[in-house]
Amino acid sequence: KSAKRMAEIEAQINACDMACQVQQRNFSDQATRIGKTLEAAARDMSLDTFERIDRLAIEVDPDLGVATASSAGGRIALGGGLARLEPDDDVTAFLIAREMAHVIARHDEEDSGARILFSAVTALLPVAMVFRLVASALGSGAMMGSWAGEQRREADEIALALLVRTGRTVQDVSGSLAKGLRMERMADDEWAVRYKESAGRVAAAAEAVPKYASFEDWLSRESVISIERISSCQRQAQGQTAVEVDEKRRDCIGRAG
Picture 1 (cartoon, rainbow, N blue to C red):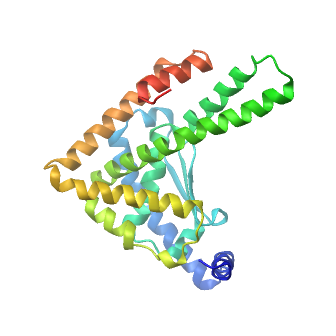
Picture 2: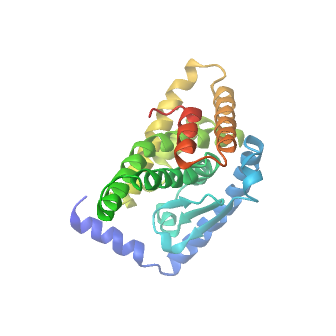
Picture 3: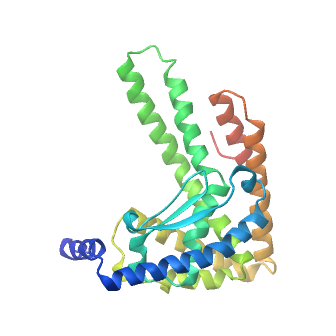
């Protein structure tokens, strides 16, 4: 998009008139309604998650813009700017499910573990403090970058499994991600790139469905197994050093060192 068009989109996002406010209220109602169904599916899929947190708190944050976020404590936030994209139920469900998946897979804790690991390692380096700080920042960034793609793939797979449990099909979700929101209103930013990445991954899964008679049952079963394995890994690593926790997590999740 041209710089002028990008500026127009940004101005529209920042300006919220009466119609925009109604749109945001409707989006908030949609998210609340869909979130209840998805939380029930999440409880059925991963009881261990709700031993760590009381509930998944879903909210629309007007200040977040066009974005989504989640925390280890179970807070799911959808940016108020998403209302302008007019997402249909399947799109909103996928966005919520994807953030729920990050909570279920404990990605926030995993990211914190990476930062702790590099702080511990670099503290042992026989160099000046400034070099330790630089090494820690660069190292943690590299770790986060190498894990980010795998985390997104895990989140998309778990999100699909959650959506299947609510009665949706992979094909329906794929179609909605491609056409179920106003793409022309989406800015060319990082969130849009990740959304399109997820849509492409779901589309590939939809194409694979006819090859497997019980694909959706398989998806749900494998996601539960993966989640239980990750949770078990976290429990076994409690009380160990940061390096040992990281090694255990890598072994349990199956990531390359």
